[in-house]
Length: 325
Image (cartoon, rainbow, N blue to C red):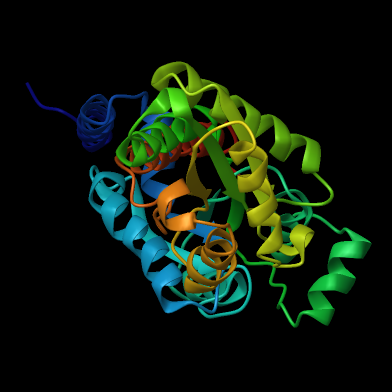
């Protein structure tokens, strides 16, 4: 039996369509999703940008770059995220604007910003969204100009993850560090020293009260106080001294833990350290180690998990709106 040329073309076309459709389905199955989601994933080029406050301290910057190194492997596994970078909001390069320009140059379609901040502050709520073009806050715009922080709206779509809920992580982190310093919990008090923030002081108070209550319960310590070392305290060591003295009025010894993301000589050594040294008989009555929250495997795990969850949303959103650039 002979087939006409038109019939042959239809058969070949149908066969090719089946083959292509099967290939798309196989790709989707291999990637654990529907064909539209698999196509969206192929079309996106997603980067993770870890954003932190920034510091003039090289040691501080190394701590945050160390976090990038620690999460890079798990985040890049599976090829859903194609790049991992760190940006400093102020004081040093690479800035947020610099990194976004780099990512635009490298052809990324989406940038997931994960802020590494302890709790809510004007930086996380206003400044970062304003820098990346997601928000127009007049006060932030003016302050950024004064501080010579560049704003840049990238071609890539920016997605900002919620702040890390440090409450549970801090409980575990501070407990571990306080336990290492404690000798006789029943005769000790806990002192937490953090950066603080004037605008969100109540939120900072609640955070440290919650962390302190957990440490007291686990260690058997009955007294607690906290103080500030940042701009809210005018970087004055006496705020640390006074917080320690409040505990020493009732206890023989104070266990002092710095609640700071990374190590910075100015804070852990000069401000907090000088505040400790000003306490009478500090050598016998104060236990203090100038360390920081990082490195901490729990923080690394949170970054990896948060990235995976938001990449799912980015890809899912792209599949739902295929016309989006």
